[in-house]
Image 1 (cartoon, rainbow, N blue to C red):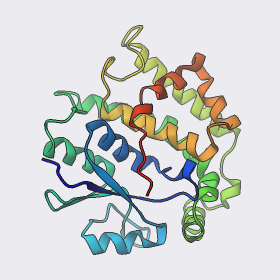
Image 2 (image 1 turned 180 degrees about the vertical axis):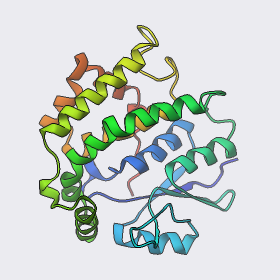
Image 3 (image 1 turned 90 degrees about the vertical axis):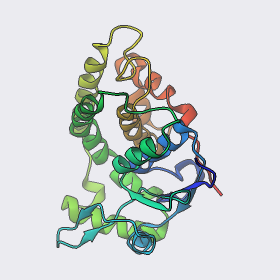
Length: 252
């Protein structure tokens, strides 16, 4: 069906190496690349997200503490169906339904399994990585977004960005990745990199998007990234190799 490129809205970093950094947007970017769908990226600074969403008709994805609507990225606009979809979970559902002849990310009967895997990854891997990278994300943003990011995150955490993140977060992360590894190992040798063993699913992209967040925010040559990929005999470096072909970013 796709004849005109889908528009993916993303938050830009300040340099090429960190242009696409958001794990939430990476989930949708991975899916678009995996499915081979034509798309282009529109880069939107943090303070402009709400106005953009209201302008194109993207729904809010949450509520702020004061009860007002909260608008977030990713958002896609599909000119082929005139559809606007917000939130990475909703985007993958939309793409699965609208483009049925593309590779599937939800094999029949796996939705509950994938949801359970996500519930494992979120507190044990995603949350500690958030603490580890949040101050570094601020550094990689452009000036227009930096002020917004610092203000909102410091309110959320109740402390300065520079005070967030500790060795305890690394201990939580290492323990969490150990649990994920043990879960995947039940597939058996040779089929223990991916949740379904020999095929990529949405759940795998969820985990990959969190790990690429650390890689981009800390830097591929950083001590933190080397520390992560050295865990469990290089298991996570091997895991990320499965997704390298889907890391295309269109930078205009």
